[in-house]
Image (cartoon, rainbow, N blue to C red; front, side, top):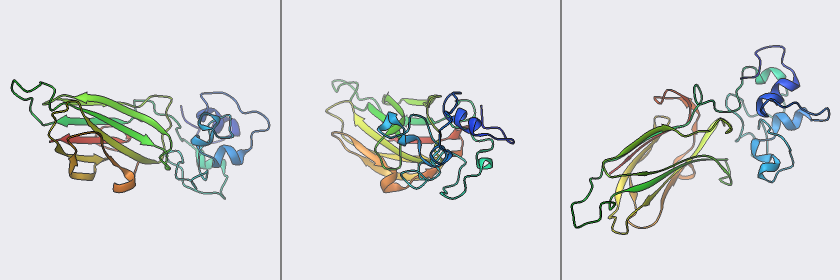
Length: 226
């Protein structure tokens, strides 16, 4: 479902962001259009519905995909054909991750080079994450999959994070490469031997949502280990 391309009403814009429910008579267009998804009561905000974020508490940084940041233009036509949630057919988040490390020979433990990988998408203030991949990537193993849910919003920008956590206390450390939407972010980054190692947009830069080699419009994490 998407907002219609013409003859757009307040109800059309509201329903797309709120799973088909209708607005109340006193719903302000300015709040619906300008405030962000993260200003709803689900995140401690004042709204009891999902809004579009054209100029919310982060000046449009958390706006929905396809919108421009603005606090002056409240035209209904700005929302024509816009989609609020992933559908996992056209819009999806996707991860490709490969662990190039080899499994050790006995007597070393077989999980010595296994690594847990977490991929997060955050709001622009890194207060709330709204989409997550989590998986243990075994030595010589890989994962390739959609990880978005159809109740998650499509933000215009990808505020990403990748966290590596070794499974074994005998892990010796290694390196990694990370690309987001086909843009290289980390090349030869160090994964520590102990504890979590994090790489994120705060250090390496955010990316626009994009159609990428994953085949979907969303955020594409391409990760190699070792």
